[in-house]
Each structure stands twice: as C-alpha cells, then as structure tokens.
Amino acid sequence: MHKSRIGEITIDCQTDDLSGAVDFWSRALGYEAEKHEDHFHLLAPKTDIQINIQKAPHEPRVHIDFETDDIEAEVKRLEDLGAKRVREGKRWVVMQTPTGHGICICRPARSNFEESAHRWP
Image 1 (tube, rainbow, N blue to C red):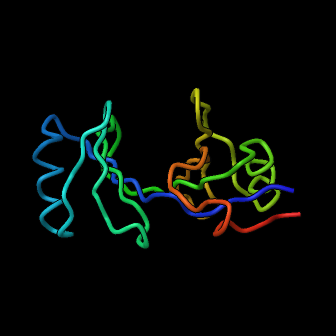
Image 2: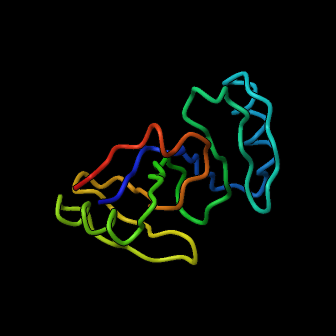
Image 3: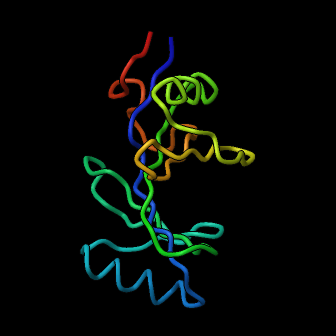
C-alpha cells in the first residue's frame, strides 16, 4: 500500500527573466514569492495547492506534481492507467499522461501528507 496526492502546480517558464515571470504570477495570484535553489514558491495559504515557478528549456506550460511516499509504486500505478515514464531525476520521475499532460512524481513537500493523501492498495 502507498499514498499519494496532488502536491504542487508548476508553471514552467521559457524565459531568461525568471524574476519578471515570478513578479507577474505573484501579482496575478496575490501571493508573495519565496526563492529556492533554482525556482520560486508562491506562498499560497496552506489549504491551497502550492504553486512553483521555474525556468524551463521547453515551451511554457503547466504541470502537476504528485506527492507520494513510494515513488516507484506510484509510477507503476500510473503506468497501469496508461501514463508513460519520460525521464528520471534524482528525486522525481517525469511522466506523460495518456492525454499528453506532464506530471512529476516526487516525495511529499507539504505538511499533513499522512492525513490527506489517498491510500492505494
């Protein structure tokens, strides 16, 4: 058995001006921005899905991060539903859904994961 839930929505920006992109999204959504290593988090209320903004080499798009306590089990579950593994990072797996959308499978980043995640057999 493992658990998973939607963790973040990530806004991939094809830009040389990530600060400008962060300024736009921060002001558009009304959230302050917090810088991390190579990306920013918008400081949404803890009850909201968190929003991540990062620079990307590909066209602008939005993808969903799934948080899980067992990355391989969640990848297998999603493959069984028709998703395909695209590539692996050190701490995540990038997949493509049957509808063509990108998703990342990663470890929990937000609090209350244990209480709010869906339990899968």
